[in-house]
Length: 64
Image 1 (cartoon, rainbow, N blue to C red):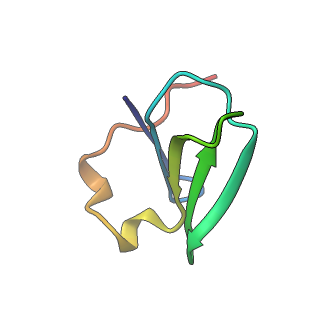
Image 2: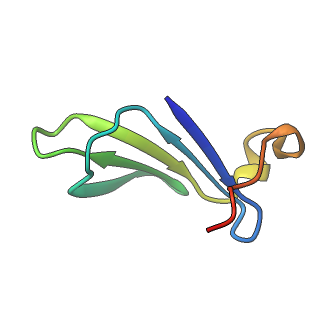
């Protein structure tokens, strides 16, 4: 599992598996599930993450 937080966009991504996502579905406003070719969830993206959790303690994304 991999957790990434982008402070610039206030987006929190939880990668559940190291498989390429081929589709996505917004299941609640601001909560997007990513799916693989078999329809299994590979990650969850939270837009406006600071509304859901304490983002101050999350590490920032590494520089590209």
